[in-house]
Length: 115
Length: 113
Image 1 (cartoon, rainbow over the protein chains, first blue to last red):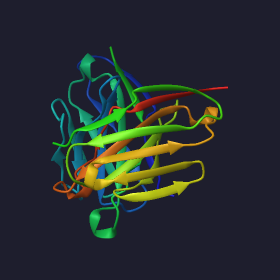
Image 2 (image 1 turned 120 degrees about the vertical axis):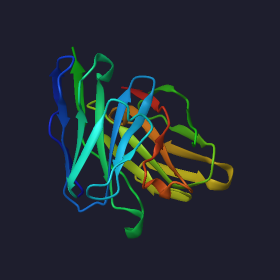
Image 3 (image 1 turned 90 degrees about the vertical axis):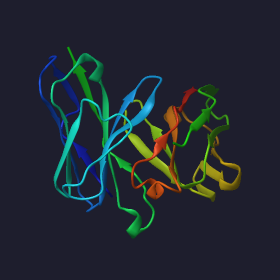
Image 4 (image 1 turned 180 degrees about the horizontal axis):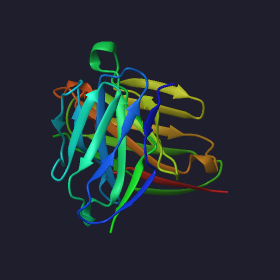
């Protein structure tokens, strides 16, 4: 079974703090994604990555950055957290179209509260 | 980008009932997945179904790509089926989901004992 592990289930941070959300997958997937989920808005794509050191902006990248130094790890960074970044953050990975169906597998989520 | 609409937004049923959830999308797709989000927030992939019909136990799904909709059927509902069901699509011109899927807003299903 593919496993996507997010390092923190719950975090509470203060406005202005730098926040790191870590995500690791163990099935050699090419693609990794960060979404945020808010009530009434569904899931929205923040950033994604096709490969190591590659990153692409999703629909709502403002206020976020990402890092993919190793194939299995994709980090989401909030340089200066703000209260409107309070949300559930979901990491996902998929094998890549070259290996067949691009089925997304999600981690358990990280619920971030910014005070 | 592609628009994804799910209906109904909310559904309350008694245990044992059957239900049909619908997903409409605005453009051609070559990736469509149904997910169930449990009360703890975990999203579980139910079906990868860009076209055709699949069944898995009490759940089945049908996608009619030419008419741009997909249906998720749940038969003999159980309380553990409660949660939010999401449809997510990857467009023909976006690498089939390689650059992320677009999600609908979900159907919130409550199964009462």
